[in-house]
Length: 597
Image (cartoon, rainbow, N blue to C red; front, side):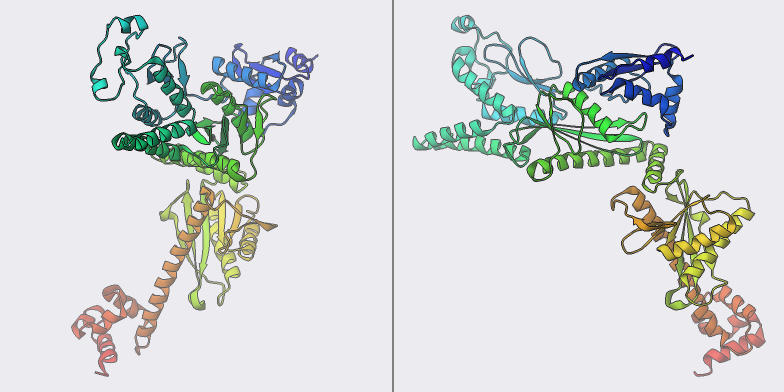
């Protein structure tokens, strides 16, 4: 007989709505939205979930509730509100306890304009919120410079002004206010200034620019050049502010732009509000994943939450890929031109924010930094497990002499230099990279198996398909094929080759995974070249000393141990040589080097 939960799932409607999962303690553990409630909820109990957290969630579900709504938009909003209200354990929660600044035009006669973090419903106008206090300060400074306004909190009713209740203050004498308290400025003039300011805050500079330009020309015609110069300076200030905030095309008006990039554990999302071609709001945040949410799911959540938070009523949004937001919002995915450049700018902000977070995490929480890199490498390289232990092999046989190989070891994405190993090629005659690779891989892992030491999760071969195939032969002989992931990296175009696959993988040139593999490869090359160079030098030194008649290997070893080089042996005195190798051999060595003299 089916359980009550199974019956609930089977009787769900095929309508859009929101579902809630409860655990044995009757606590909401997950809230989700769906175009089709029955289809979406059923998938939790019929599909095999790869993600461990999703499997745990399903095991904990004891009962469910659902709410049917009319549209997908209603489902999005209800889901967002329920998540904020109940904070379920398995839901992504966009945490933000900041109180952002607003620009307020106070509901009063001769309105004041100021920044505030408290929104009071008293009929005043509020613009924002702004995520950057500097933006608010710059805007208010510009407004103060263009249009002198009062800063006092007096009740400037007509009766009190006519009764002479107030006197002008220092702000009037500093020309920061035109003195409406003593009727030096009338209400109509003040209101016109407020209208112009309102348009500037919304990003519409055109009327203010035209108006100021006309005032400047009038002063110039009347030969009032000092006043004209002051207006010109104000014009330049306004144009300078406009230049900093204009994107490309002033015709793009009242549009929200959203973008997201993500890794295994987090998403990084950006929001722009654009009015008259200017960015008037910008916000970027980090979103922690809970159940391997897709970029599409995270971006939809971010859009709904952000539009609510910033009180956006825009009818159109620009995004890098399609999202489901219902019929009330026009979703545009720009393909070219100014619109596409705006989305690219948003994506660039997401990437920069991600890089900054990585730098901070690396300092504050190195363990999380390592976990994130390992998870990203596992995904990028299509591995079954995280490559915590990586080994990379490189051959060195410059000009076909003294063939050697190097193995470098990385743990947690960093070099473990004490575990680096050099190999002299023993079984291969001449410069044969493939056979040399086969030999060193076999020797390395035969020894690790014999000594019962841990094997790496990933082997990187410096070379293309040929070297990779050679290394695979050794793994086959040792019975390690399939137990250790192995890839080859070709030098020219940084192609990543996999066993049995002729088509290489190309990683993003800026990806951390490629940077670590390049670091591995370069480190193996450096380590191998150093060993090769030392061996060739030693070989050259020994060959010169071996030319001396009746001088054997042990004598040469004793000489080099003392004098370090053939040059120093040559310049040593007879007494110094006698002290190391005895009188008879010392006479022969000294005579060999000094007979020509």
